Image (tube, rainbow, N blue to C red):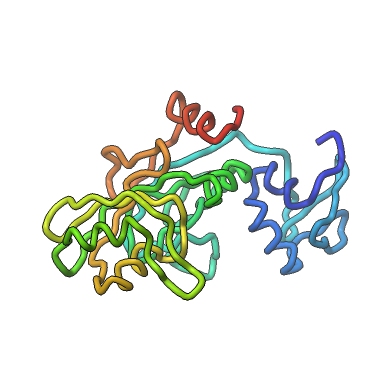
Length: 237
């Protein structure tokens, strides 16, 4: 770093966490700059001593991006007080954290990284990045249901989901591609239409797929696959 920058960006660029997570850590009083408690929006100078929970934040490590096939029951959080947190479950030897969410009752693809800017770009709904799921429900999937899901579902007075691609796979199963990530979105959409989700598996995020990755396993995203992701995000390696 050769000039001042916002503290949350410093932590993100260092590969410690996303900017949003950095702001949370700052608000909780867990970040210090030159021994003093940091403030939201604070600028840091080149060479400043920045610590989180007393740990010195060093320069960026090598970029890491993992595709993880998360089982049901694992929670996509870094919180150490959650025994089923995904960081502990994966047990990767370097510090990484999940990009976005996949609820505890769902399984499938979750990306994990040490790159704050990459996490921000993938997670934000404004990018309209595709996420694909296979969903099993408790009633037969009808044409009316498919059309209603695809047109957008009202979840509350202020929230209507974006139009999306929905295709029937079998009697009680459908495939859906979303470009937003509301909390438990697919489950809430189904419930609004009188259906209950029995099983939900995410199989793709942008160009990254589960492929033949076994449940509970992970693989490193690299080479052409990694470069294609960066290109789609408008980022340079």
